[in-house]
Each structure stands twice: as C-alpha cells, then as structure tokens.
Image (cartoon, rainbow, N blue to C red; front, top):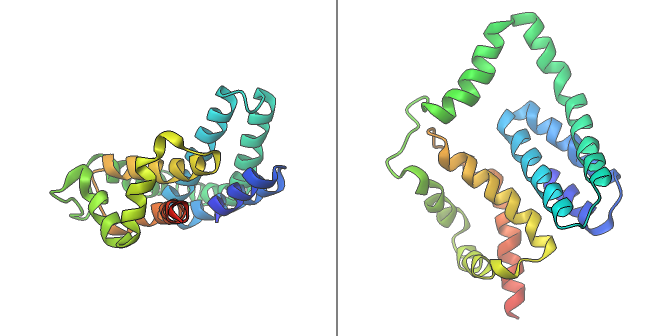
Length: 193
C-alpha cells in the first residue's frame, strides 16, 4: 500500500500521498517490523537520488521524508512504547534482537538454506513464473530506467538485498518484492507491443 501511495506522489506531487504512504508504513511496522523498514528505506533512497540529481531541493526532500516518517511513527510508536514500558528489556530482547538482529545474523528456527544469497532469485522465478521473462527484459533495460521505474527498482532491490544478506531464509520474505517486480514485468511487457 505504501508503494501505491508513493507512486501516486510521483505522478501528482503534493504531500497527501506521502502522508498516506507513511501511515501505511506505520501499519506495516505493526504487522511485521521488516515491512515498515522495507517501505521506509526505498523512499529515503529515492528522495536522496532526487535531491542528488537536482530534481528536488534539500528543503523539499527533507520535508517529504518528515511527512513520511512522522505519521509512520504516530501509528507504530504508541504500541511499541507501551510494550517496552510494560515488559522492559524482555520486549526488546524478543521483538528487536530475536526477530530482527538474530534473523539477520545467525538464522533462527532452522530457516537457513544451502542456496544462500541466490535463494530469493530461485523463489522469485517460481513466484513470478511467466512474468520472469518480462522481468529479465526489464532488467536488461535498466540502463534506460525511467523515473517511474526507479522507485519500483528501489522497492524490489532493497528487499532483495536485505533478505539475501540475512541468514534466515523464508519464502514469504520474497512477498514484499512481488508488487514492484510485477509492475516492472508489466512495464516490460507493454514496452514490447
């Protein structure tokens, strides 16, 4: 949902869709911490690229990042603070260190695989099946990347890199990549005709 609203912002401008994307990211934080992080990082990178390429002023780039982060925090922070105040370090140990740090560094619940970093390439080929051909076509055209595709590649790429370097490997971790990759595949498909 965050990707949808950020794409709306890219098309129409303004802050409303960034605000809505921030709310969606906050809800994602509530569902699974990684989902919130994986919508925040691509947006910050995209905004930084826009600033570096002189498409946005520093003031506008910072304002957009704040408009994204503040509603995200307003949605997610109260519950996290409550849980910390109620359970203290036990909450941090389980929620943050076990579910985030340990999954990345050590692997948990026997969810490590022999394919290592290429595990998600295999999963994406299986999950996207026929669309994989068009995704390869989109990847071949990455030098001619349009502004609209930039955000999609960032969403898919950040998720891919984060989960590929993580020791814990689950097929469901590929799900955050699918919307962006499906849209990129569709873009490549329509570019043929």
